[in-house]
Length: 287
Image 1 (cartoon, rainbow, N blue to C red):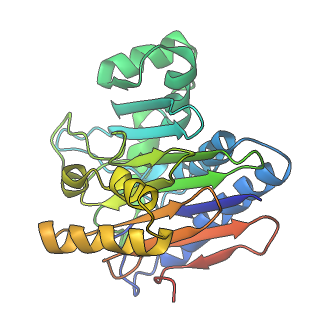
Image 2 (tube, helix red, strand yellow; image 1 turned 120 degrees about the vertical axis):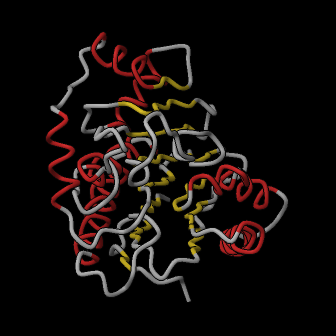
């Protein structure tokens, strides 16, 4: 059995004229990952390439659609996690890369570290010959957007034919953030988490609040203690709402392929596919 699920961020309004573009990006990301999984690719490959598609969509707040900070720079965060080994790669406040998720994976595979930040992440990218872009490519995309969501993150979860889970998240942060601000996305357990023995989850929304709850690990722990995936996801978002009065959402996936989708925003575009079934695309909570 294989499963892929992606999201395009919480914080959308259903009357946003760019929402169809977000649907299209999520569907394309899910289709890319679905094909990889059906061809026998790993869950890590699936989530990385799904997020790359989302990073290429200017309508979403990651990669080409990232926001500028108060200094006019684009600083991006990303994380990828292997549920079979608990290996993690992450970057934070990195500049001039179109695909932070792939740089995060190189942190996982090419260094003994988990997280590289700012100038250190940029130096690492140059040392390994990772493709760089001009900052204007990111700024032009971000400035060209209209009616964009206020703040969000993209993410993906996958279950591969070998039963391995993986999670990935990527973000351009929040508008007008201070230089050096890091949100939940590159932090294990907050922005994303994956463990074959429990579940995988990735979150979106108010990063400062999501960090306080370590919300992705919270969901995985609830599933480990016997909660079903959808109720565990809903309970985590209820906690986010009741305890911190914050906006957010998440997706979750357990080792049996059960999906959880929950958010307290008006809309959160997402797409998922099981095996070779038709891709489901929506922005509403599951019924």
